[in-house]
Amino acid sequence: MSPEILREYDRVMRDQMKQGIVEPVTPIENETEESTIHYLAHHGVIRCDKDTTKLRIVYDASCRSHGISLNDCLYVGPALLENILDILLRFRCKPVALTGDIEKAFLMVGIKKPDQDALRFLWVRDIEDTELDVVELRFTRVVFGVSSSPFLLNATIHHHMSKDGDLSFTERFMRSIYVDDMTVCFDTTDDAYDFYEKAKARLLSGGFNLRKFASNS
Image 1 (cartoon, rainbow, N blue to C red):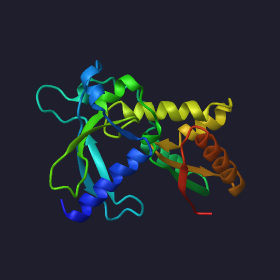
Image 2: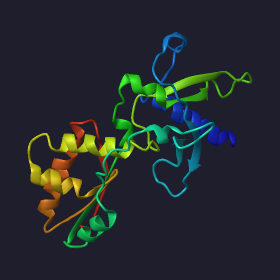
Image 3: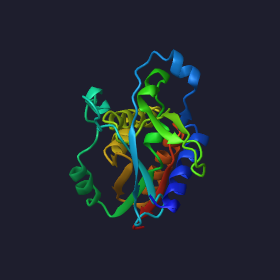
């Protein structure tokens, strides 16, 4: 790993700690912890074609050392994702197109305290220090790469989108979303703008930021 990538890796870690996405595990908790403890393997993936996040840290919940992996132990949940081919076919049916993206969607969904210790991982306290001081961290949010995460994300989005009881809007939105990407089309620009306002406001009420909008109008 080059020094530049290492510094960016560390910056991502520290940024997530500031946001409360990950937190340190205290020595006292290690002595008294009764929950299931598991450590995630992780590595960096560089995407030079990305405009936003060029370094993505990937956590491997399918990694095995001895026996079974974390993903082998989890209930995946029912498949709530729309078929991507159906989404793309519907997208071509009307003249006004609209796309968007939910920012850091998985990391906006919280994990119950007893389950957070299954999402521990190791990092170093100071990358500039010649003495290797390893620290234990854990996720407080849903992790991309864990087999149950897609169900948890979709179920959470559906909950917030259906709060006001507008079932037709909720159904249309859920049929237009694939993981964190929205792809939808309309007869008129007014319909598209109305959908945009409702979707952004509804998701914002649940702590999600719908962004990176694009349209042919």
